[in-house]
Image (cartoon, rainbow, N blue to C red):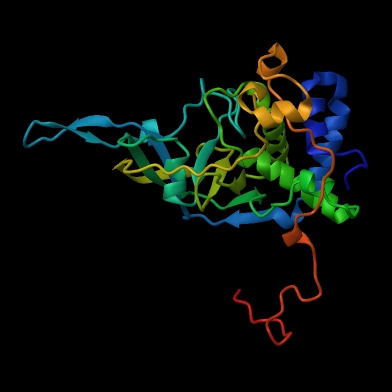
Length: 301
């Protein structure tokens, strides 16, 4: 259903150009709608979801007249209808109710620090909600680009949806600019016009899913409590090569034929990519996946 030149990055580019390329962006959205059938998911009325907000209020105990920290009241746990910041699926004019299927994921989404207080609420859906769920789309376009074999149309379609899922799941920061949300906002708005109630995507910070409901009144707060952040764990993965300053590495300076005392040696030197090759562990072998007797081992599902 996607045209031969369709890609999520191209869609982002078209949106950045404004009305000049509106037709091309609309065709991309048409293709998303046409290929979304397998991603329809229904959340039943009464389903409980979590929402977190960093902070608390002081509540006075009637018997002791002492003020103690407590969770935000219901009106603070729902986003206002006006004045919200732009987000993945929401804009200032069209706010969304962001929820999560897992309480820990909901609390991680508010980026707490150690010792921070978090008001955690359980919301119950007051109606059945039909969602577009892209949380299972994992393969992204760059993986196909680095592959030796050409991708099939089905694989290209799956990768486009994987790029969409990645865009929704990408962690947000205070430094983000509204233009970074144009693509996911446009996708959300289109599916809202198609009659869907929200978008589901994998939480980048927990094991659950995040859900953006287009209708702020689709769920109501049922209970709320105050939590304290006990620890925060970070895992880091390097995604590019080091660059180096040759003046500090004699062998590097020697390899490129410069003196470590020269001005040239104080400038960064970057590794240059000359070829892409499969890792040895990715190469298929006739015995891959077989046990010592040449039989495929039992697998747990």
